[in-house]
Amino acid sequence: MDDDVGADGGVDSDGTGWLVGSRLRRQQLRPPGAVSVDEALKNLLAVQSQEFAYARWSLAQRCGSGAADDAGGLAARVEDAVADGTVLRTHVLRPTWHFVHRDDLDWLMELSAPRLHQGNKGMYRQTGVDAKAAARSADILAAAVAGGAHKTREELAAVLGEAGFPSKGLGFIYLLMHAEINRVLVSGAPVRSAGGALKQTYAAFPERARQDASARNGDSGPARRKASLGQLALRYFRSRGPATVKDCAAWSGLTMGEVREGLRLAADVSPGALASFSRDGMDFHLAAEELDAVASAASRAGSGASRSAGSRGEPPRIDLIQCYDEYVMGYSQTRNHLGGTAPYFASAGAPMHVVLLDGRLAGWWRHDLSGGECRLDARMDRPLGAAGQAALEAEAERYGAFLGMPARLI
Image (cartoon, rainbow, N blue to C red):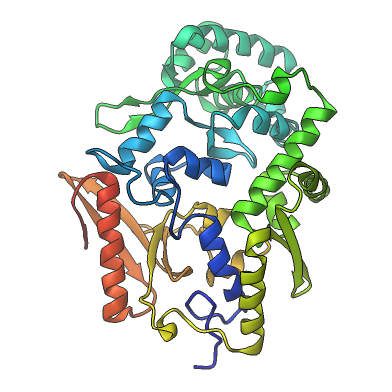
């Protein structure tokens, strides 16, 4: 074989295999994993979640054994955390739907808000969401959900429609998003639709998200912003490193200058928690305790001595991850560690979620939940062999345990 083999398995034709092992560990896709759903979320700070059914798995698969202690699997634990407000779901960062822990959303949304509003400026103008309309609709929405009166999108549409505001289309959507960004609305306890699917509701932000400690202490303006920048940089690079400033900027929606400022502030917040090194003309930042392992893997890759999991006598490992998983979306400049392109727009009838073989893209999958069982459609882009097939079947079994129902490959 002419291609180098990466430090954590798979063909490393692009020379990024040395990144894989550390990223899998720091993102808790390798043991020991998180002790609970909320710890998994706190480690990652934010998890993209527009496809709720699959986003539940992004949290659950990072939990170690024993995290689910009763019937129903970890899917039920994630749903419980969303219902009680431990896990909140809202538009933040780039923006798109994200899960964020209730302890983190207040400061994270405040940090994101100026750039989110700037990015939406054209659509606000197009849909008539000016300062007056935003303020008046926010008062109406806040009153509608006050006191734990969680409401579905349809119910809020009716409330706004009665007040003369758009109740459908982009005008309605951007009124809701404006209220989310301004910390008026956030996710409430989901309700079951007639078909059994969970439906998002909206609640009062102050009733669900915990106010950041710096705000309770009276800090405001520049002081809060600096604290938040430092916290974001610290949490991002400790959970996703090795990564670059450009990776973090794309993930967070901040400028590269703001990320660099965050790195400087993180050194004050938690001295020695992060380390840096240069490779391939790029500066990487990561959790300090990972530096020796990453440097060793990079050295082996440079000398051509790195080996796949199989060549080290270890069984292959399959991971089924959603296409918007943080292992994918957490990077931009260095996403080529995947060894393929994701996310992508699948052709009609084709799965779009990602199968990893030893941390590298090796196929696509989706689930069909009907008739009391989970049917998994997994399409590999290479032959697996007996050990690889056994790893795929083991991952399918783990996914079934997560759902609390039998799962089989089709």
